[in-house]
Length: 381
Image (cartoon, rainbow, N blue to C red):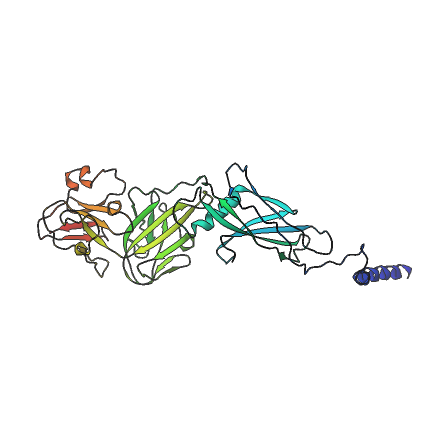
């Protein structure tokens, strides 16, 4: 009986401990845990730009007071950054977690996060450019992750450095799908954009609801989830989950650009759907650019032919698709007047006739050019 009484007393004392603490709230040696701690103060940063370097000799340090949890508890801090003070979803990057009231942000991590945010809103080279960066610091109790509170926002000017690129850009790109050659078996190569590594294009017909994937090599089943940016400039109704799905039947120019990501160790893909615009360029029409007077008609069916206006003379043909680049980057010709052959980094200085006389396609005045992109052939008649 004595043992039962003793255990009962100990249990009662243990359960009653919080009550004793609450009653002694005025004693310094019995602090009350506050999980509703008010905000804390993050020290303002300097006005001079933080010139980040890969070597890390000028790192940015954040300092703050500890939230009032009622006693000097162990606290975990997390840091988010944004290029404005709104910290909207999709425009915020998390840097990581830290201990103590003063913590130095690693240059590599900070630079990569700033570059990623900057590239989402800007084009061109970022290295050496300044960005205004806002920092949001959150605190919580390390023991049980409760009591989260947020400090005041601070900002600084950060000068970005070029991230070393370790990933290699693909030298080829393919499409495979329900409407390409033998369904889900034919890996159709795209055409390299001349002089722009990692950029490819192709002319394809898709049925309504037609699905496909892409890849850097045959058997590389890359789907919708890998696309960082999808631009449907042709109103094709492109959607997807695993496969990429085309909502509206028709011919489209599909462009795929592969670039190193913000940390330089993986690829980001941009896929663009463009209207199927094909033009005669230069001779024999005399226009060194995209002139709608020399635009091909577009067929309504998969096996139909693109047809040019009547030629103005017998000069050598120059043909290109309009894909957001200089026309010569997407130029092609008819080898021996029959086979579609693309410029695609062939190394010619001016035109494809440099590869041989059979590449100097030409026709007579009044002739038209017929192109069948489904089987890669054409004619002049």
